[in-house]
Length: 427
Image (cartoon, rainbow, N blue to C red; front, side, top):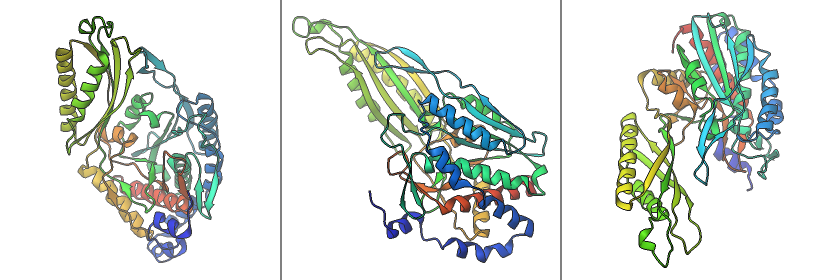
């Protein structure tokens, strides 16, 4: 894929050059705020992104995750507080043969600073990517000046660099003593945070607000409302028989799985997305298959839609059991609750928007179909903006790119947001 200057402008949005964006707005900042923001912008973020993204850290690459966790621990040790690695919770999944297996995930990184401070914040990111250790997308390249292509550059090693830059700048501010924070960088966000969900919930308790560093869209737009997400495996047990001699004595699990897929697909509505994704099972042509596994993803827009979807899923499975004379076992759940807007979250978005305006940035937000750890945090009753990372795009593909000047831009935005929360004591 070729990128030209015109394409970069399209991806970056119609924003002024950096100098123009800040020259007028800086007059509204105090001298202390300006100094803090410039410290954030001057951090060696690009070098960090290049170092961290050069190491493959696909969710299943435990060696790569260990390497990256060590690099991150060394970098975040520059902040006060103790960095620790937290063992992952066990994760169960159903393999293609129908066996429940425990999958090992990597350690998560946690840093706690000033837990006694009056304002408590949570900042989160993830060290894993979607690119497995044997994926062909492994290296970095410049698509053009200012546009860096590479695995995890935008999603989200760029975001991790922005977290560190903003917090390092905050520590040099007179307001630092008013703010305590937890930084959590997990190893399994890209597969649903099953091994870190409990840690996220624990750290979210009592927080004034949270910021998560998924990448912003190329034009700087943030993700607002998000649906929930649940991944399910339905194991269907039928009865084998000879396909020619006595097929009527068999119970075809593959046909039952196909019927289940069609019935679940029919549950789609404006409030629910359903994606039957895969069927495992079957065998020789002369044998009625006695086992099949349907994999399905469901994305409800609201908590009520999530409850209705779960009930409909169970009812549909019960009907399949009755109609096909098979036995079904459901594995999985909704691990990402829906994240509809609420007043506290709206206030936090408005604060980020106002901080952006001070810096000459236009900050907007739109609903998105994607999910992330912001869903889990919002479910704990904590207001969260979950796309505070740099601008980039084409994530989860070998065309992933980072708009490099947005590292400084987003570090300033985060630093100012942190200062304003510290000053107000609330969002």
